[in-house]
Length: 214
Image (cartoon, rainbow, N blue to C red):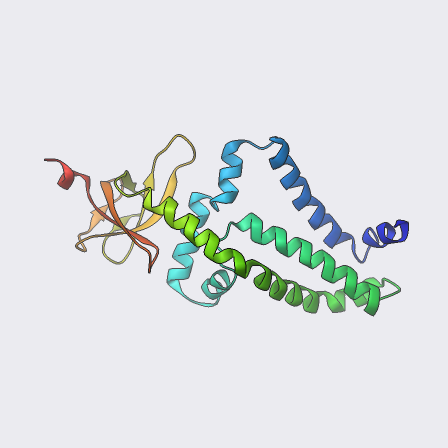
């Protein structure tokens, strides 16, 4: 046991051990209630701003968008993905150094860093895959709860192709990707009401608030 602990804190393995330690400390604080409810909501919901940015990046395409989609960020909370990665990176680092770098040479560790990261990312992808349907169902329920709520246009404009709106609440505001129902162009700070969620695109459909007034 002592030999294992010494190996964990050796210079070759210390970065991975520290990363895992920070993740464990975070979840310990969540469990004992040191972090506020708002902070927990930030991570379980990927935060309103982060979630909207992730959705926007995925809509925009490109390598970064493909990377986000590959790890299901925006569907699975960031901290859960990061926690699995930290644990698997720690295990992969210890195993690779134990068998391929018995002298715990820093130089050899650096050579193995990229392969270790790649293996850890692949393992993370495999581990989180069973969680995807669960979080998709949870996220869909939460998104449907937003239908009927009032929001404010938060981008310079909102039309049938582009835009985001902000929903004010007791906690942090919720920022979501939205489009107008008829392609009508709205301006920043215009009031709208959410009327529909399109699950295929992950985008909300809104109408001007004034059109709801009888």
